[in-house]
Length: 221
Image (cartoon, rainbow, N blue to C red; front, side, top):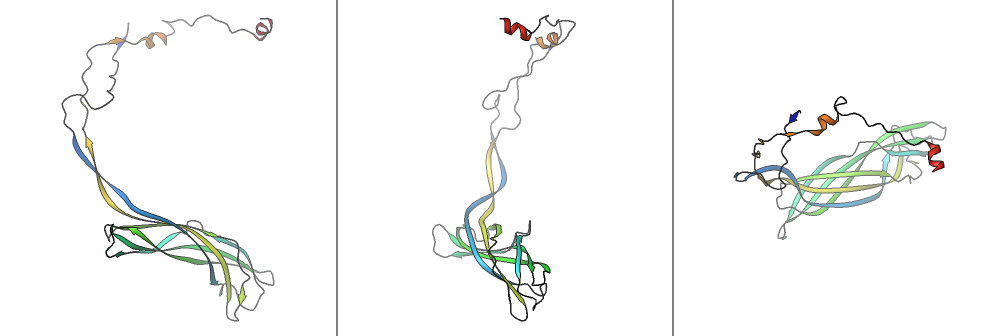
């Protein structure tokens, strides 16, 4: 007979023994307030010098947002005096890049990239004017570009852009939780046989001789 030690089963709640709990503090980013907004605007861009003037009429073949080009240019917090709870105007300038493909009257394609800026101001709960501002944006070109026009000096492209924007104010905060430390498990002094050792040993436990019924057995039953 081979014997092995069975591991202890932990209790459902708490730790055994007389170990008083202490406090452990962890630092996390706590979001105090956030706002979601969306913007849709017609924007105009100079396509020159990438697109030469005097070769029109022009057509916008495609307008696409450059992947991973979303970025925050600047942020600011301006407290609003006398507000309870303390509020502030939170401003974020966010941008993304867009790639245009323009076709002239001779069938020549021109590709160029321009920056699209969005300026957003929202009112948020800000107990500390030095809190951090996080801005996120997802830009979309709505594929509703107007026909480019020639000023005689440059070519102007006009397209509609939409943006989903989220602005948050957050700060580093400490969260305190109860900490027991390492639990003191009681020692197990008794030993019990492990039946799996004998069951898995082919020299100790034989495989039973049985046969599965064939298909004709099901048909004749």
